[in-house]
Length: 415
Image 1 (spheres, one colour):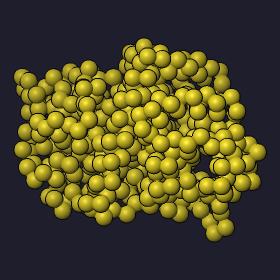
Image 2 (image 1 turned 90 degrees about the vertical axis):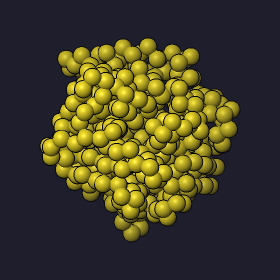
Image 3 (image 1 turned 180 degrees about the vertical axis):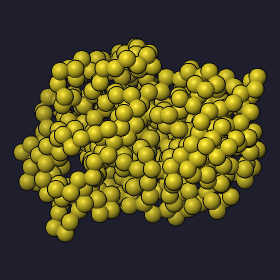
């Protein structure tokens, strides 16, 4: 079968690999960029984090969003604008902000994340991929004692499902990660997930794309997708800046831009861009960055070492497709980092970036056929794209080939 995949980020490339793996398909991948993994896949926190797969939509989030209108240091921020798509998405999101839905969505996300980590291991072994992988677990660190107690209690939803979580004192944190020794007094405790890990997702995607090319996957870069063209209940072609392209099946993995392309054939899907802020710092001789990736839970700042760089990400800003940023936008993140790891890297040489995370109201992606019979969607992995990519790709491939996925895929169906 001739398959065209729209999008050459983590999701598109892993899907291309899984589809090419069987040898039954002729796969082409389109992207407007000049290489794979140039946008969100290039600036994430580098974490494979099933231990952090809690649903964003919870009973406490509405209050945080309201506070963001007058307080700029919130982890979730709204930039008010006339955007009907945003208000529709927000209504669906707020509907999920209750304990029952939060638990269901967390369990679903965790199932996909743990399955995806398993698939990642298989792909790495099959292709001997080197991507600055560190398998020392992840620390979810708390400064406030009350928040720590609440976090420890809430972690039972994952530990009861087999995820290994150790509740640590500040002394125990320093024992496994000496980089926190000087600022130990600021740490109330941490949740340690020894099976979580870190690794350079962009480096991984480039290596996997090379393996795809060896399997005759064709990549068309600098090719902007303009629209889909439908004929009755089928997609006839995709219109691009390089002409029309026909296929038997079209897979949409365009991240935050997925709904814009689907709209050209009358399909509305609740995926909305959420701007994330990313900071990358060079590590100099003598710097002491932690080797265990960490999430500062009080400030929701995630950071990890990737090769000779130190990466931190923070903030979920609802601002449409705006990617603009200023150094002051990173002030809260930088202050949080300096308070915990002042000697981690060269704070005077920052590389500031933003990206758009494709968020669904429930937090889990859409993986499945649309109402148009030869149009398939694999998108909406949000802030967990690196963690969910390999599992999402395998589920997508199984569904396309008519095979029952290894995990329940009912919750990923398109609305």
